Image 1 (tube, protein in one colour):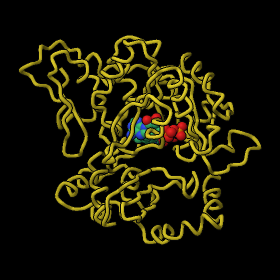
Image 2 (cartoon, helix red, strand yellow):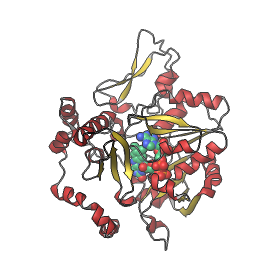
Image 3 (cartoon, protein in one colour):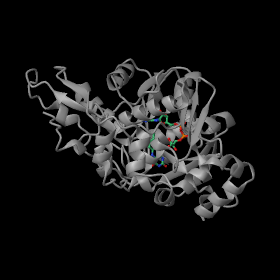
Image 4 (cartoon, protein in one colour):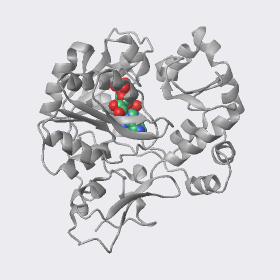
Amino acid sequence: MININETNKKHCCGCTACESVCHKKCISMQTDNEGFKYPVVDKTKCVNCRLCEKVCPILNKTHNVFPNTAYIVRNKNSEIVRSSTSGGAVTAFSKEIINNGGIVFGGAFDGNFYVKHTYAETESELSKFRSSKYVQSDMGTTFTEVKQQLDNGKFVMFTGTPCQVEGLQNYLRKPYDNLFTIDFVCRAVPSPLVWEKYREFMEKKFGSEITYANFREKTYGYHSANLTLRFANGKKSIENTNTDYMLKSFFKGICSRPSCYDCKFREPGRVSDLTVFDCWNITRYVNGLADDDKGYTAVIIQSTKGAKLFEKAKHNLIVYPADPKLLLENDGHMAMENPKYHKNRKEYFEMLNNGYNIEQVVKKYIPIKISRKIFGKFRGFFYKTGILRFLKKLKIK
Ligand SMILES: Cc1cc2nc3c(=O)[nH]c(=O)nc-3n(C[C@H](O)[C@H](O)[C@H](O)COP(=O)(O)OP(=O)(O)OC[C@H]3O[C@@H](n4cnc5c(N)ncnc54)[C@H](O)[C@@H]3O)c2cc1C
């Protein structure tokens, strides 16, 4: 049986394949003191059939061939591009599934800004999936719901982290022609507890409830995306990776799931049909194209089914062919590289669990430089005058 404890947490990505497959219903996902969910087995009910081990994507990791086809794309609808993380590719693929009577599963905020997997059956509902939420998504009963829809003969699209996609495919235990999966190049998934503490702190600081959240708002362009919060009292918080407590915690490697620091799914070839990621350096791949700072998505074709879906969705996209090796080595390097583990990760969580707020914890372990804060205050001005773009261009070169 699956046995995850304090000593081997990095061997569980929390995908829920084991919980979903258990006929005896003796596995439940329980939240630990870092906010991550792990399977706990009720040994009195377990009949030791070992199905949970057979579907675990970490215990049964498959290896896939290096992909040979890639594209850089942008949705033709500018509003979709504006509200998406990169170029709005995922919406174009999802739309194709919806227009064929299908259902799309993905990560979204619920009414309390908790990140969970849910589904959409109409084109307008797809907006809730747009823009990356840098928090581990709660899968709930998604895997069993996906299976039900597949067995009913519906087209199903599932989007998620590489481990969620591989976990789903293992849970299903057979290929389905009506299933389409999209994963992304994934740095890591941050803690839902940190996200909760962050929201609590920000609501107190701004004296009002959060009514809107976006981890990658393009207010100052794609290259300078911000975590933006809006509050019921009309106030707004716009902070970047250097000044925001949540983003800084994520990018400093201090609050991600233990399995992400030694991720078994960091490979160019995936079990998914399509892999998507940020295309930061469009001018490096497409000769003569100027970077308008609106964002492009890099897309890797991982299967014949993925290639077919791409062909069908193409009419909604601006498409540039690209070299997959070049794309992955540059913008997609997190497909191969683990994030660094922050040496004070344990102390960071201890402090957070001992009543300190996120500002105090960040100040102690990953302090924000005064110069960054001052620069952050004038970002609006730097953006309007073109200075921000100039500085970003220098950095990219
Ligand atoms: C946690 C996380 C880490 C990432 N790390 C990297 C990285 O290191 N390098 C890189 O190039 N790209 C990374 N990405 C992918 C990137 O941010 C974009 O999602 C990708 O470029 C596609 O952009 P888009 O505009 O085409 O799609 P979008 O419209 O932005 O669609 C995003 C899709 O991701 C899904 N999603 C959003 N949040 C979650 C979540 N928490 N869990 C599961 N699914 C979710 C949604 O269902 C949606 O289908 C990451 C994304 C996430 C969620």
